[in-house]
Image (cartoon, rainbow, N blue to C red; front, side):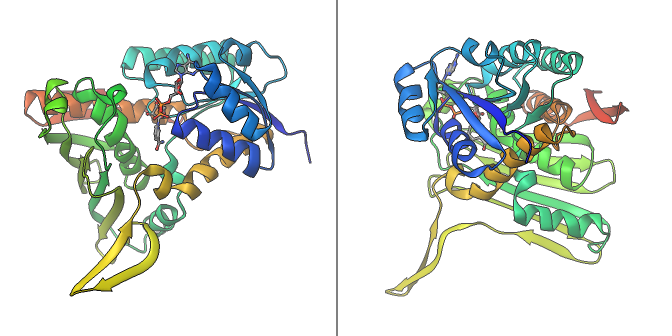
Length: 345
Ligand SMILES: NC(=O)c1ccc[n+]([C@@H]2O[C@H](COP(=O)([O-])OP(=O)(O)OC[C@H]3O[C@@H](n4cnc5c(N)ncnc54)[C@H](O)[C@@H]3O)[C@@H](O)[C@H]2O)c1
């Protein structure tokens, strides 16, 4: 076996801890060299548990010549500056979604990674989920026929934490972005988008954000899409997808916490997961394993920075639709094998 890929993780919230754990314990070709969090105590706690080094400074990752790759799981506003710094130091990069919140800034990150020749993978984990992969294969092989409708739900239990409360684009760019990527990956490019949203809770209203959104898409192929998103469904976390075709339909259901049904007093109760950590253990592991393999085997990553930018552009178009209360048309062009979107009107 070739030498392990030496990786450092920055940002050790719930998501960062999971990635760090997978890298340290479950990904054979990776070696977790250092974990970094702005709070040294957090970094030390995780480092002790995973038997690695701790630091409170991101520079300790980028300036370490022995580190091959960095995994960015810091708050979204830090993604672009950290990508730029890591690319300048020649480190390959796995960055959690979204790439950023501003298109020009996100483009700056892409330019930096491209010009320094490092790999940049974005954390669209659903592409690695075993169930979604099967569903996509049914579409790819043509067994499903022409796609007529793509329908998907993504609902957080909520309520959202402060970090994710600051204007509508935040919800569309943080949550709906997973569905924009899934839509592109499963069905193809989008040409029209209409968004309706509302907020019930005072904190979300005060932030000028929405907590429920219905997004209607028209794909280039003529297929329609309906996405429903909630950031505070309260009852639990759910994500499911259905694709109706001219020959068959495929449905990916909700993972339950277990396969138990509790039948009592005229009721049947099934147990839901609370959050993304419970819903996607296989997908998070598979996406990181794939990134490490891409670095080790010197091949392209499976989800690119350009995919991150495309999904962010769709979030931007969605935000415009929500605010202007109208349909928004988007166009796209291909350049060097990647798609680039623009808002037409
Ligand atoms: N793919 C998914 O399903 C998924 C799920 C959750 C979060 N995310 C994304 O992951 C990112 C992190 O989200 P989170 O919920 O884990 O956030 P979080 O607030 O729970 O954790 C972020 C951590 O980063 C640390 N941090 C802040 N500034 C830092 C710096 N300069 N250097 C190092 N560490 C720093 C904070 O101390 C904190 O521990 C966000 O971009 C979010 O959108 C993705």
